[in-house]
Amino acid sequence: MFKLTKRSQEIEIDINNMSVQQKLEPGKVLIVVLDGIQGKAKMCQAVEHGYTIIETANGKTARIRYEESELFNS
Picture 1 (tube, rainbow, N blue to C red):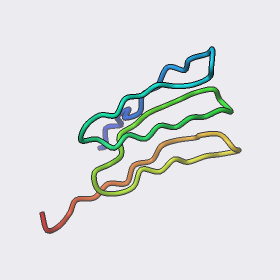
Picture 2 (cartoon, one colour):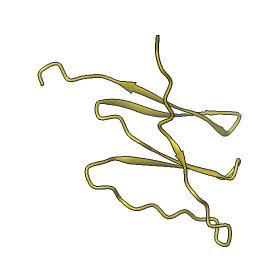
Picture 3 (cartoon, rainbow, N blue to C red):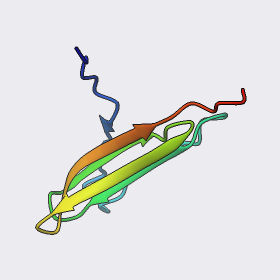
Picture 4 (spheres, one colour):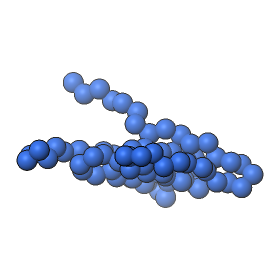
């Protein structure tokens, strides 16, 4: 059975200028999703090998999907 984990985290939005502030993290590829329709900002780490897919429905962010794989020759 698979255990679902929450990989994304909400980022605080500065209401005064409708912006977010996020620092680079050494050794990581971070994806920031800014959804102006829902007024939300989220961040997640890209998978090491595979796809990190942002899915939308009716013009809104619906989900973040992760497809991972492992290199065979490692």
